[in-house]
Image 1 (cartoon, rainbow, N blue to C red):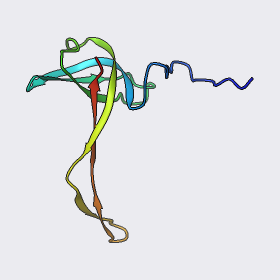
Image 2: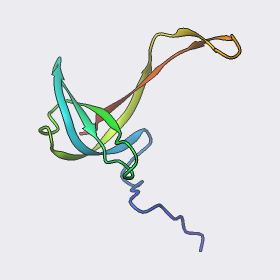
Image 3: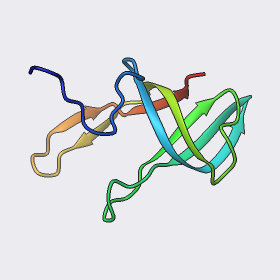
Image 4: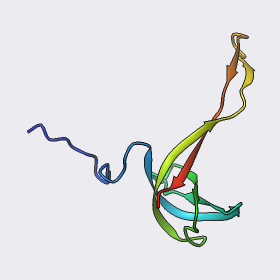
Length: 107
């Protein structure tokens, strides 16, 4: 009776740590230095939410604009240049280091 219950639609068996399943419609595509960058518009969770937009890097084209795709991707990221910001309420100054996330298609 101690079985692990997974939410409907979740398929954890396919993904390993730092992997994510991206499902959606190709919104735009571009190519730079032999790498394809595909912008994917994901379905909104409900009628009152905005859809999420992600970009997948890949060695080959993932499809044409308007195509529905489902791709397993590796999640990565990097830090950008830090900048100083001041809290408007307290006047305290802190350093903020932005982090950009990346998605690379797993072939």
